[in-house]
Length: 311
View 1: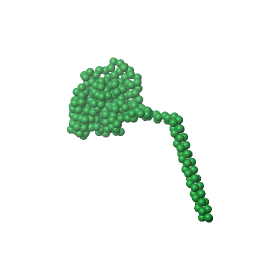
View 2: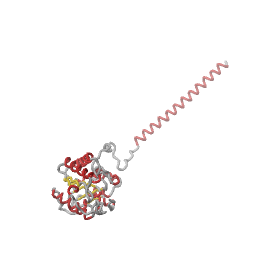
View 3: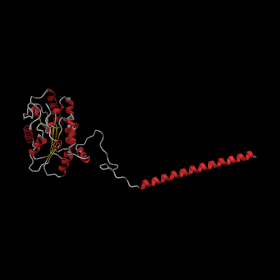
């Protein structure tokens, strides 16, 4: 009898334990369900967080494929990120047109004003003043069709990507480069020149394209510079027979240098180059503007004076 009672008591206790455990599990489950329901209701009722400044809207394209480049997007991106003087001037020029034609110039140290040590005295700025055209000028010492130049800001294709050719709608685009590509394989030089001309034509289909090719020291070019010069000219004419090619090396251009026997021009030398380029352009139908008040945007203005490097 005691065994029966003990067994009954044990069974009763076991049933109690199971009942308490089931009750505990049910309570936990109910709590979890309540939490999930509360979270769902909160997420539906809460307002969407505002997008970060400059972030694209949901569903909008966030950029091109890696390696893709659209001429002109970099200038606006720089303004959105804090900007610089060249891009800000370019946007101001676009938003407040004065009816004058526009020229875009990219190049290496000659375009940057190396030599006279003042970007305002570079051949490119003097040319814009001579023609009376609005201008956007970006020169980076050491830049070429292949070489990146100072601060890895080049090559010239990258400099062109920073000038918004589509929005500028220039009547003229000038590229000054070649000397710093000395030693580059001719096949690569030709490829890069062709790509640059194709990109300009796509972004600014109405623009005249002019190339200012290799400059050399007063004593004359070496074989490597001559090869680069020939490659640039051949590629340019193959890409677009209407390209205006100005060939300082082959044409024997003689101008005053900042240092005796050196490469870079003095202020007088830059003035001579500007006059030579203006005369060549006029011979190809590029005429001075009739209006006044041209705006010249020059990257050299924000970078400060540039002295010629030791030759």
